[in-house]
Image (cartoon, rainbow, N blue to C red; front, side, top):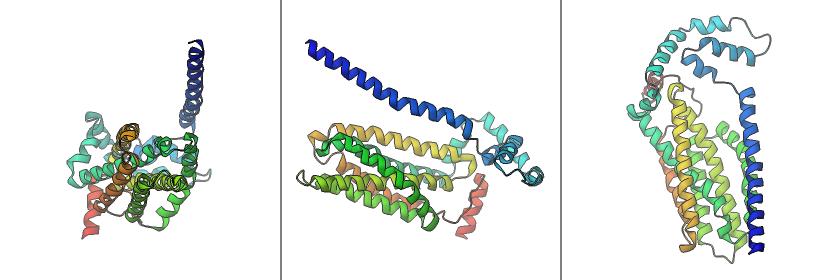
Length: 298
């Protein structure tokens, strides 16, 4: 009994140290954000905070930046529209969220990116959680973490050169196929299984980066924050389901990895409902976005 009690105390101490080590970097990161990250000048300008937007632009520009910046912004006539928009936002704090579902095209895009986020999140959160079910040392999750590093430069290259739609679709399909194969391959081929797991995770991470940037380009400034927030919520929701599937995997071998693969595979096809934004410009208002879409369709 005493040995058991000592072990439990040691386990509690180890968990406490683990929580401390993971929490301190997050706290430091939040503190650094306050000093090095500013509000979007575009958002401030659109909502009537013209002086704040100009101050941020001047602070981030070169010392010899032209002094005509303020005159240029004021001459566009946008401040008055921004002030009007600000008053509307104050009266209706959920106006941007309502606009996402009031417009048919916006609602279609919102629901589509949420479906994509859910499928991608199933693999991204579920694969590392299920590493222990593959019969490997659980610390091999380190390789999943390392694969996140090259996913970012690859995402930048893809955004610069190729279509957003087909890139998201390709990574979702490859991730899904690898996930399904990982569930089918037997325990005797552990090397192949871990390779498939890492490939599926890497593709899901890259697809995550792509759809996050894609969502920013799909919505105008006035509702962009709400749209990206809903995308994040779909990620969180998928994390709930993926953790449940990993926990019950022992009762059914195809659960977890097989379901993860199917989820991201079929969700990838929903990207066909979205327009490709490569080479386009960001819009500020719903009316501007609608006008842009009509010009493209026309």
